[in-house]
Length: 86
Image (cartoon, rainbow, N blue to C red; front, side, top):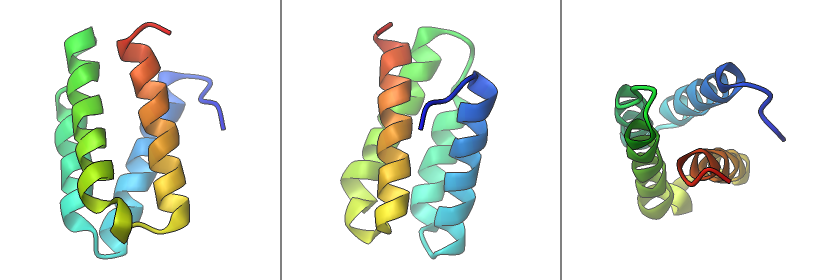
């Protein structure tokens, strides 16, 4: 799964957040929303989002479905590449 644009990435993040909330993972969903709120077009905003995605993975991965965990990992990797310009 590769994202062709930021819009596609943001839509995937939104879908994951909604999916988490609908499966009882409201705290994980809230962390993602908080991370998204920091996006400002600069690298520090992307880093803020990455920090929150990492927190979700660390704190909630054992509660996520396999699909949710895989989607989260893919999103993390994509955002990591934006932050580190890879």
